[in-house]
Amino acid sequence: MRKFDLIIFGATGFTGRYVVERFAQTVQKFSLPTRWAIAVRNTTKMKQYLGEMEASTGIANLKDKIPIIEANGSDVKSMSKAFQNANLVMNCIGPYSLLGEPVVKACIDSSMFRHEYKQ
Image 1: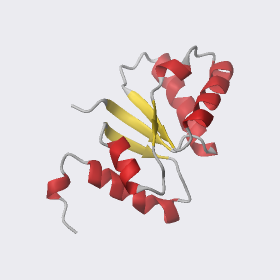
Image 2: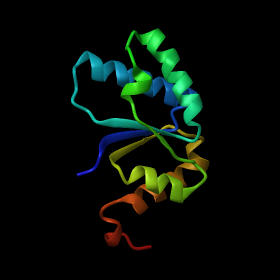
Image 3: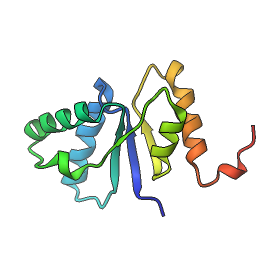
């Protein structure tokens, strides 16, 4: 069993911040038993953004509730290490046409079914 149901990757950008904010609100509103985390390159910046989200959403202690994992979008090994703890990765870094393939590779590399994948 993996540690997280979902990891939102690249949450310091515009799209990622929006996704994290809306997801946090949905989890709280419906009391979803979701185990989720955020993976970002800059954890300090993400903690700052979560503080801002606390104020705008009214959800207390987001900085303490949501685990933040360090992962670099230009380093497949870093992403693979972060993603091995998740059942699902939601990619929010772009442009997807340039940065999407390494994320998919990292997901495959981190998969429990890695041995079934052949290039």
